[in-house]
Image 1 (tube, rainbow over the protein chains, first blue to last red):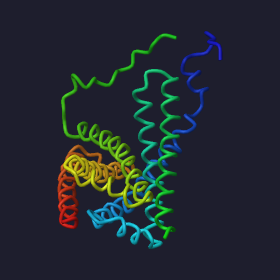
Image 2: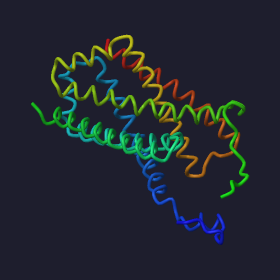
Image 3: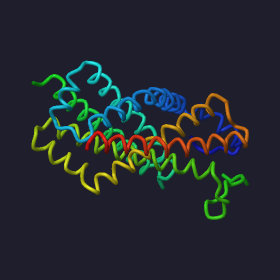
Image 4: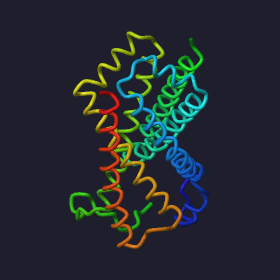
Length: 129
Length: 129
């Protein structure tokens, strides 16, 4: 919109409406944080139990439905929560709008790639022989 | 448009270091470290899915001195971010904003993070041995 001297800066700011995505981001970060409290503790305890064990122990553990399902949920929540946090850091420090958008897109695609790769690995271990 | 004479938040160089702000910075730092560490988690799972040889290589790394230092750091980041995250959720719900309470909850978080890190790491070493 062209700058018109008849409109005050406050009126222009009001005309921009809401931040549009801020509320969803805020809730997504909190809900995934809540989910990660039990999931994170459970997963960390499971990793401690598997410390130093061979591949066979990991495969046997993931063959249980609860372990496989909860591990997949943990991976999904970790990368969802993680990319929301990384996005805030990018928004705080990116020097320009173009850099900001490019970095956020890159972070989102990377998080999606890693989450799918992790879930694929779990499924292969859980459903394989 | 003329720039409004808004108060700037103080720059870190002149801001007096104190527990709540230091903990806020560490929360962001540990969050970023955990996001980076999640890449290693996916690598470990993919290695396991890849077979005995790939898994042995990944396990060798996590059992090496570098890997153990990495795991110890990861453990601390996880428990700090978890405990301080719960503190943040309490703030989001509107609790604990009084200065005395904010300091007390801060000390509890730091102590809990250190104790939980030591418990998890020592338990992992005992299980692995």
